[in-house]
Image 1 (cartoon, rainbow, N blue to C red):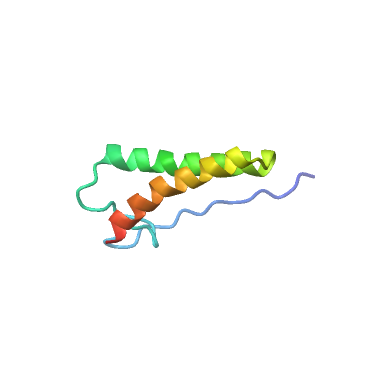
Image 2 (cartoon, rainbow, N blue to C red):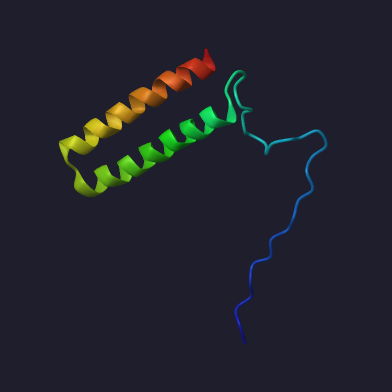
Length: 80
């Protein structure tokens, strides 16, 4: 006898909802290419954090600080 498998239930979209709940729309004036680049920067931060966790060296922390500085400017621009 096999183990029961999970079933994925499709939920119909809410009327008028274009994005999942909790997602912010792309800021005005930002192109899809810019958004893609920003997502890549967040991915890089995640990768750097994993590397820092593994190596625990000063250079890894400096790389994280630099990545955060770039993202901080973008986040501040989005939220201002």
